[in-house]
Length: 463
Ligand SMILES: Cc1ncc(COP(=O)(O)O)c(C=O)c1O
Image (cartoon, rainbow, N blue to C red; front, side, top):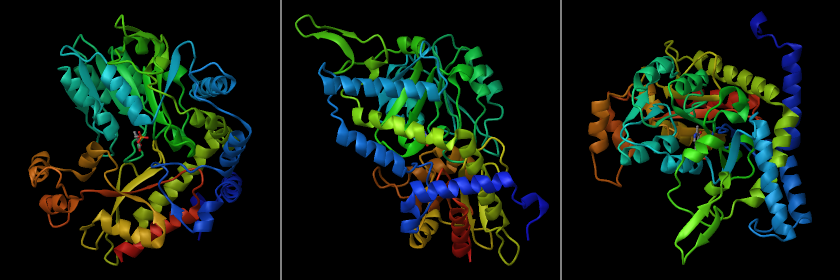
């Protein structure tokens, strides 16, 4: 029976009706395949309207390699320029202040900054411990340049609660200082405080904001927050195209980066006999080789989909399903009253997105390995992810790893022979320490049935 707190309002009902229609019309492949797709943090799905628009565009239009003057080439250049403008508008960015370099994905955008940032021994590289490996890798470039590397630790809810104060302590070096953190964790769904950008900039840091997991269901205003660098992948926003991401950067911050090389597409000129070159003055000097011009041509349909759905409506939909999932998981009990699921990250809806990480537990509290849950999920047609999701720092904090024990277990075996099962046995504690979680993430086409199937999966595995 519904309590007053759970009784759906007319707003809830109209939200449900809108997304039910959207799913039926735009994502029919989901119900046709009977799949509960719960990996939106991995990738969004393309809608039929995007596929149709792109198909029509490619049938009717001739696009050429953009680095020439003929009609098809100029059309591709215009497609890229239009895409840049649309992205800046979506991010509420002033184009006099920010520029866009298209990349293959978020990782490639981070690497552009990593290899060009003027790290030095009198500066510092500060990373959130909760970061995707594509940002953790920054530390290798920092260390190569002799810059110290420091981490901001998450608290018990996997939030960066005291990060501004910690940053103050790390701001002493006089050289270049870079802070990199995710606006939303791909492990726990936590939305880290964007105020951290202000605190960091006040302490003379440049900020690299990883918006890959945040942007699919949240608005970001660069006019308001002013990070130097923002990185993203388009397939996470609207499924199509894959293989296209962006580095959105302040023009003055871009001018402080030192490209380690030049390549086709990045230069005004190169002279071989004079051994000299001149890079483009704008973000094009970061676009190595031929950009993904057909992908850029697909972006207007993707942004149009977001406009049709509305970011606020999408955020409400995902927030509501997320709380249904979390409450459903936490309510599951064994006969002895012990929980069937252990959640990592916040159980409340405050400052979190639609990514939910958890483990399934035996009656005696032992963790059921995530790969056992994955296997059952595959059999039940539930697409969830298992492991640490390329975010080892959040995982280590979530599972409460002892660093010394983890170091010993990681050192076991030879290089190239790492096995998570052996690592799990080594970390041991009779199955009480998890070495990976299960992640369900919600998005535009998710519905209540997907959530129920995730909860049913946990019940089936724990029983
Ligand atoms: C928060 C976050 N950052 C970075 C990445 C890396 O994105 P890509 O693989 O598209 O480069 C991901 C991918 O899941 C992510 O969720």
